[in-house]
Length: 198
Ligand code: SF4
View 1 (cartoon, protein in one colour):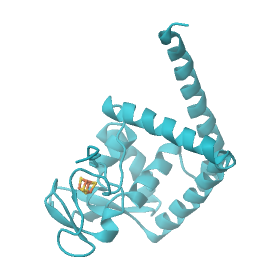
View 2 (cartoon, rainbow, N blue to C red; view 1 turned 180 degrees about the vertical axis):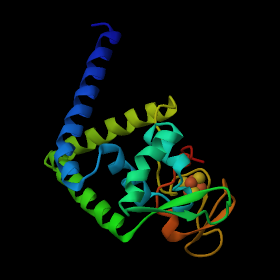
View 3 (cartoon, rainbow, N blue to C red; view 1 turned 90 degrees about the vertical axis):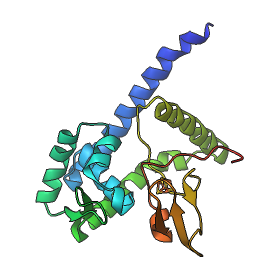
């Protein structure tokens, strides 16, 4: 069989999986009063380092235009789930933060997603490892192609200088700032995987 002949199947499986996940999540999201994009917005704010939780990075993470991201965000602001705060050092920007009600909804959302992951949890250890490796390779390919942005914590980032300012006080060479330990554990959309052996 020519190698090319598997490509249409991969696309068809990916589309099928995307629809199945969306459909499985729809009922839970409806119960929480969220659209899929609003759910992703809450997840982004809950897991992203506070100074990069901006509308600009939200738009890149969702893969939409800035104006579209604002349109997704506004109902969450109006419902009292999200608020804007001044950026800690850039006066031209503001950052997004969850209100207590938003944090509670984000926690309920996480619980709904956990239930969906039980499908994977039920597989054998070997199968779970295979699924994880395959997904990692797919994500890497899509990041390399510039199709998606994936945020990750500082560990393993080329710009991370652990304990550069003392125990638990790290440094990011990209923004040239100190990072408290708890912030280094949050997701950063500028994470750049360090090359192996470097
Ligand atoms: S660029 Fe890297 S080191 Fe800097 S904050 Fe982001 S993940 Fe951490």
